[in-house]
Image (cartoon, rainbow, N blue to C red; front, top):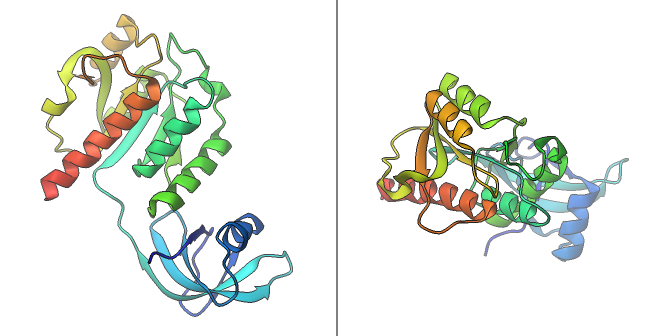
Length: 242
């Protein structure tokens, strides 16, 4: 049976004590009904995973102690998958971020597009981080999805080209995603707003070395398209290993 998980800022050495924040302790001791003496898995969001035992001890800040008995570094899933997307309305944003976190996407970039409904400067990065942390714990991953600064589609692709990240932009006239050979170490998947990317945006991103990909004959919501592209790359890589 898998042990419940909590996130910590830093994992101590084996034999030392990790201190759970009040929120994490409340989740473990309340929602999960754990108590002193129970086992708990700790993750730092940077690959570190540790097995610990909850202590009856609290520090001056009211944080709960957990003594580490074993630890290891979990390698990041390959390839690195990055997603840049326009911001969907309402609760759909949280749904998209949660799904991307479960897929262990390396980073998320909010896009400012010509047809964006929600400006990228209204993106709440702190809330996004909290969603990614919860997705990390739920999916039993080891790496938290990073929140990147906002970009336009063109500046995002230019950044990718400078960092040798293969960039793909979703468009109905692109190559079917299933026919793309995924043989690079890092990918950026760009997803447009509800009205799609403009012709000018597509032309500029292609000039900056992006490749168009089609996600099928139907028009997908932003959150569906984002999860589909990330999931396809993850599954493709898994099948190649198998």
